[in-house]
Every structure is written in C-alpha cells, then in structure tokens.
Image (tube, rainbow, N blue to C red; front, side, top):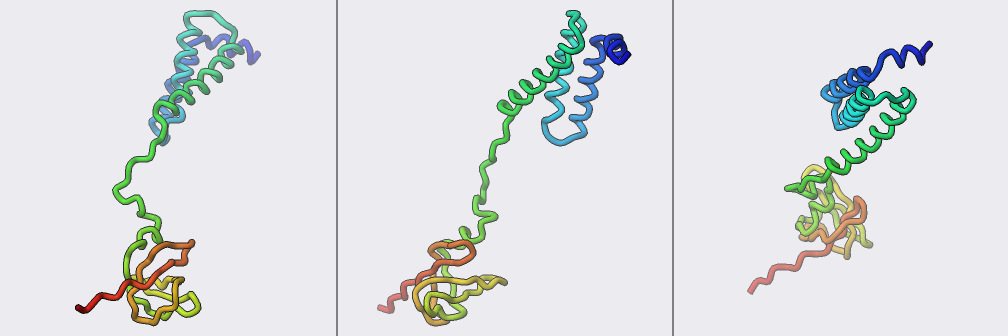
Length: 154
C-alpha cells in the first residue's frame, strides 16, 4: 500500500521536496539544506524523464545529497577572514612587549602587577615594587617579565 502510494506520486514529488528544502534553506542559517534541495530537484528531473524504481530514486537522492554537500563545502568552504586584530582574544599575547610598573615586588621569582582593573601574577628576577618591567612572554595566565633597562642619565 505504501509502495503504491509512493509510486503514484511520481517524479514531481521530488520537485516539491526540492522546493521545500530550498525554502527551508532560506529560513535556516548556513548552506545545509541547499544541497539536499538541489539533489531532490536533480532526482526529480531524472524521475520525470526516466522511469526508474522509487528505491533507486531514494538511493540516488542520498548519494547525490552527500556528493552535493561535499562539493558545496569544498567550493564554498569556510575560510578564516583576515583579522585587523589577530590578538583580540589573546590577552597575554596583547601584553607582550609592554612595560608596566610593578605593584608588588617579585620575590623568589613571583610577584604581582596591576594592569587596568586586573591583577596578574608575574614571574621573573627579583625586583622591588615600583620598578618598571617589560612583559616578555606568558605561561598560561602567568606573565613572564624582565626589568626594563634603567634610563641612562648622562
């Protein structure tokens, strides 16, 4: 009974399915349903012109959908756009090379520094509070620092 119902629908069913999938593509973000819709339309064209069993049509739709999705992904694949600020979300990388005044002394290799409204742990050679330090790297959230060379007073 189901088989007779499917066979009576004919190849135009694929056209309707393809248009529905393209309509869903308009409402859904991304390029996902577009490829299924294209595959359904192609199967619909072939089903109208060539008489082939509905099982083969479904199999052809599945294969064509996967091929169309892979080809579409390859052709319209997501590429990273060049950024004007590549360190936007890398807070420690943004601090590299900058100098600050040490708020707590570095004793036994560990100290603290205030940058804007945050307090950061720093690691470097023992340095008194108030000294200028330069950030030379980071180990996770730990900033690696070195004392900034004192200005010469000639």
